Amino acid sequence: VPAAWQRPYLNVFKHFRVEEWKRSAREGDVAALTDARLKGTVYRIRGSIPTGSYLQLPRTGTQSLGLAGRYLYLLFRPMPRKHFVVHLDVATEENQVVRISFSNLFKEFKSTATWLQFPFVCGAAKGSVYDRTAGTSRRDLVGAAPADVRWTCLVLDLHSILSLYLNRRYSHLKSVKLCSNLLVKNLCTSDLVFDPGVTFSEARQADLACRGVAPMPREMAFPVPKGEKWHDLYDYIRFPSEGSKLPYDSIQKSCSGPAAVSEDPVRQLPQPVTLTKAVRDRLSLIHQITSPKAVSAPW
Image 1 (cartoon, rainbow, N blue to C red):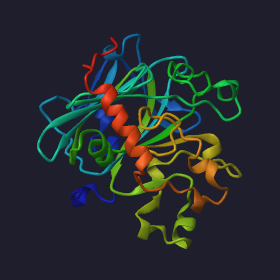
Image 2 (cartoon, helix red, strand yellow):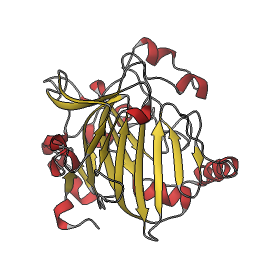
Image 3 (spheres, one colour):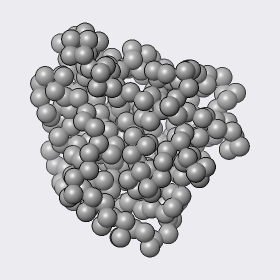
Image 4 (cartoon, one colour):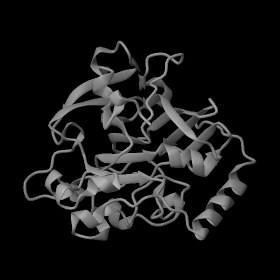
């Protein structure tokens, strides 16, 4: 359970004062700029080699963020026609450190006892050429971000990831390393499921708090012009999710995600992770395929 100072959520960039670069580190081409769509400060991380440009929290490897929230929210946008890499170091209750990495450089899921690598599939704007022509094969999906890639709210269920893939119990988030090429607005940790498509009034009317679901905190929210809908402008990805086209071996927007379920925002809420027999069988197959392989970095 997160400490009181981490509840109900922790705005990571604000708490650790990223802009001062005292408790965080940057290397290469990392700059703060104002994003026209988000109407606020974002950090641009760019470079030809992922390890050459990055933003890292905390500043050194001997320190730990110590953030115990089950869900990590990453508000980011991959840079068009580029690749990016994100590394998360998490601690288990057995004090083992596991690295969770995701990137659109990775061609396939790989795992060892201490490292999970997930391909990340970048979505395109709804109705765009990229969106209409994207096939269902892995070759069509994985790769550089499309030209009209959208701002994304990625929700990682760290508890479920460690439990499903390594049979480990999650303790806390130790560090985050955001490598080129991407724009990032913020990071947030919480035990609550935040749904960006639900307003505060809708949440109160439906009494969503009793289900552990809440509207996105205002300081973490993407702006939505009057008359527009959040899910028409941005992508929401919750991982793990049963709706994936490539079951559990990649991180991508689900066709059966919140925007596709219903026009009723309350019906669009993400569902708790549940494992059917079919899903368990698929996970078992993934383990059989990947367990003998050693993890090799793509650079």
